[in-house]
Length: 449
Image (tube, rainbow, N blue to C red):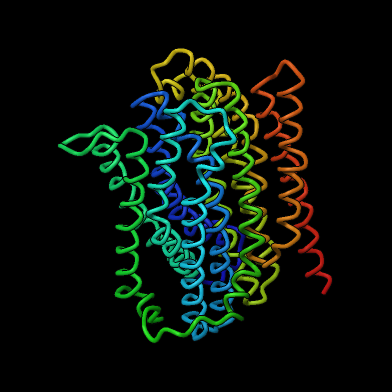
């Protein structure tokens, strides 16, 4: 990264940073995407089981992995302030934290998932697939969390193309093992949806080996000697990472878990509704990778400029990111609305599932604008290390506004299952408005000083 002086130069820098992140996010998401897609081709019951399993897995993993995202603004600000010598220690402490989180989540799923699933009225086959899928995925927790820490470090140096390269490798690996373990090809056991979990775990371990080799041997990472001269775990530095990371993780958890909560509540409407809802969520999540990537790019660039005390440049990067995301959101909305029948047919041959998924996709198109605003605004706020108020706003928007509105509409009106999607739109819109106000307040405060 380097200093830019014009808006045109900043837009070029933003695109240079964001494009590899986008490819990376899409490639990483394709692991879950193909779990859902290939399981859908296997059978509706397995799709429902993987959908329920993902609803527990995704928010817990993403929320806790979000804590490790604090490494990005920390390292970006250290580099902007010319404090390169402090980077190694912070990354090592981040790896310690990653291992601790991975072990904690593993035991949570090992002993708690059957208890949680017991509260749901699931068909026996769906219950079994969901339980075994979560256990299989849990075998990849350690590599997944350590990779998250290392990737945050790589991205903070502006080397987002390296993350892109690693993730591009991961997608075909996952597809291969899905093909072997879901369908039982070439003599492998036919595990159905459960096989998707084992395929993902294998992929996570292989990806970790690749990223460790790159960080140890390739420029500019080798000069930091991350894996040499290990410092002892330092509570003060782990606490610093956690102090910034926990609000980030909670705000991400608040957003992702509301989608999972809706999926779990959909279980009362039956297997067909769960499957159709998951199709809409799965494809919408793929499109969300664009505003999410812009958000991550904003964190890197805003953090770099704040570290160098170029606050005017940080402000410009913030709003350029929002503008770019809004522009792309109209394209996403058009894809969802005008191609909804073709999208639904990609996932399932079941006419009932397709008909219902097409209707859910209309609602998905409606919240593209709100998603496009709130994601990069959150990214910019993380670049300023302003995370505490942000996560409170996220909790209120999604859980105090979004989910209750959805529940009331689903329970007491004729919208039924669609009421939950209207609630999602209300929550995302509230988040976009409140977070934008917060970003504007932070920038005015800095300008006044």
